[in-house]
Length: 351
Image (tube, rainbow, N blue to C red; front, side, top):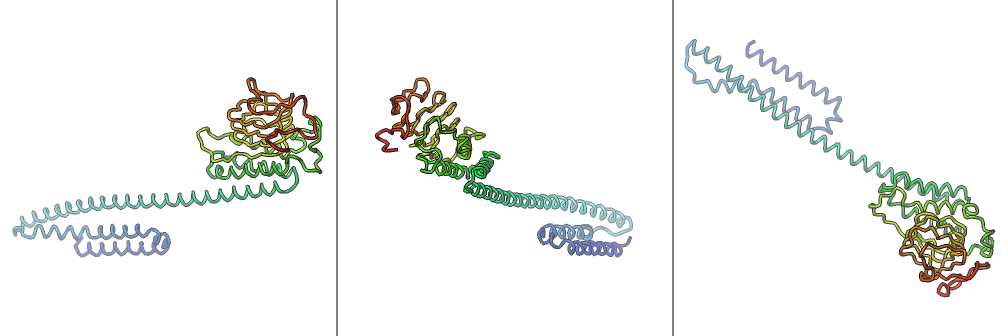
């Protein structure tokens, strides 16, 4: 093939590639706009490929321009020129291969960077969606608590419990835990205050053995207590929780079941007569001015740091082995406390 036809073929090939690129660019223009680097790299590579053959030929001719004349010399010159062209083309192809590797690595890095940014955006969107779902479930549960109906309120309490039980170490859940416990303690204080309202079917003057267990007379309050005592379930010991103390001051928990963990809970002034603390743990718990008449404290696991100053008890109250009520500041009333109201320690004022 003559040089002229070679040039025509090269031009036709370039035009064919250009036409293909134009068609692809039209059908994929949105992708190319977003990935203009790929288009630029392709144009550069095609331009270099198109220049390899004529450039190699020119360089070879320039290197052999001073060769001797004659037929044999011409043939030798032709062989040398072709060999030189091939060497130059090989060098160009190697350079192009290195360039292609570099461009490929650069594009791969860009793609990886773009994917990482996309993943971060997706993760942020998922976090926002999850936070929105938690907030929506929290609001719905709070609305149920304010319904005024015990069965609906229990559903709201269970809804709050499910929020942090699904993933107790989730950071979004850990952020909302203090609000959940604040809502539950406020619900208990509001729906089971001490002394009880005047129209309560279980007045303060009712004999303790006549007062039904809390789970029967106020199942919603008992359900809230059970959520609170299980608040550390599933939480690793090394995980630092930003939780506030539980404030259950002046609540009516007569004949309630108060098992498990009450670390740091404030029961100041609470009516805890007949309450069952079996297997409970009470470190740093405050019972100042609380009524513990008939309370079962005999199987309590831990009372380190607990404050009993001003609390009252009677002969039915049981304490852990070795526990000295008087040394802890508990006033032991003689016999069985009789209503209308148990007397308080002088430091507590009138109950």
